[in-house]
Amino acid sequence: MHTPNQRLLVVDALRGFALVTIMLLHNLEHFDVYHLPEGLPEWLVSLDKMIWEFLFFLFAGKSYAMFALLFGLTFFIQMRNQEARGSDFRPRFAWRLLLLLLFGMLNSAFYQGDILTIYAVFGLVLIPVAKLSDRTVLILATILFLQPWAFYQLIDAIRHPVENLGDPTSWGYFGKMWTYITEPSFWDTVVGNLTNGKKAVLWWSYESGRFFHIPALFMLGLWAGRKGLFENSAKNTAFWKRTLLITTLIFLPLWYLQKHMADFITDEGVKRYATVIETSWTNVAFMCIWVATFYLAFQNQKIQKWLKPFIPIGSMSLSNYVLQSILGATLYYGFGFGLYKITGATHSFLIAIVLSIVMYFICVWWLKRHKRGPLESIWHQLTWMGSKKG
Image: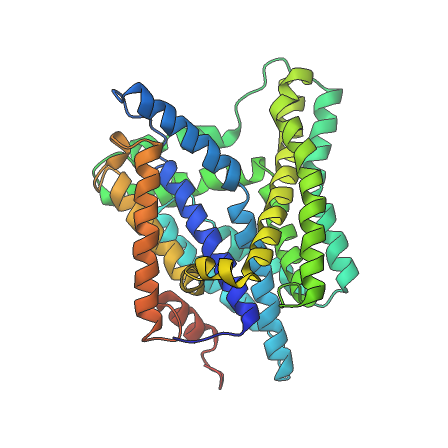
């Protein structure tokens, strides 16, 4: 198996952890087919509710944020490696993003909630940002994290209250998904995912503030790479301990606000935009808690052995992300086994655990024979075609 350096081990493990937890949530959601089976015993309904709420509390909005952070970090690593060879990686990166867009469209054919296409577009922001100073990158990321557009909308909602606030635009598109996802036609599902589904996800990403959140996370990952924050050192251990303490202190009042916002905000427009801001901040704080905890746990040799199974999964993150979409659609959608009809959160959680274990053994088997995952190899070869490196 290809053995990366220590820095890449913790990064790959964290990426694998993010991917597995993303897959857990996707399974609970039946890959966007939100449906509660009827006729389940009360104890199972209660267990389903508990599992749903607990896993969404832990990972919703946090796992994807880790994934985005590591996207920016990976860009830095590639940029640094090419600079060491006297090359500017940015033109290749633009081409690489176009290839990622194509992978994302492939993934979107199976799962409309695909994030790769959005990464491919917003990843372009890293090209001009790459040569800015550390301070400027951090300032830009902070401004985007503050959700300036949502603040503008919030102020406008306070100044001009609306009595009958309409539903978010994305809801109309999500409401149409039942006409193709639950039906037995694979082709109708593909067409629906690539048309109506893409509109639904883009509108939802805009409405939830992710158009600002994602590029901010990319920049934060770039900044973290420059600072070498994932290197194994006493200095970094101290940094992540401080980060864990500070972000926990930030998260707790934000979480309290999340639970009680409806108690002191009655206007629906004000509440909608205040929720976008609060949720964005809360998720970033919790994401930092996860990253800090994972880094610190990985430094402990006894704990590290329990985290190492995430390494091969993270090493093949692109292949695994697309694979979980194909498997999920086949399991839950109408053209496949239609398990959305009979599986609640408990059963979907168990399915996700089994899929994660299977994914791990597939990755171990593959990486013993190849340097990269199958889609990673294609991405690498196409990225560097026409160059000596390719």
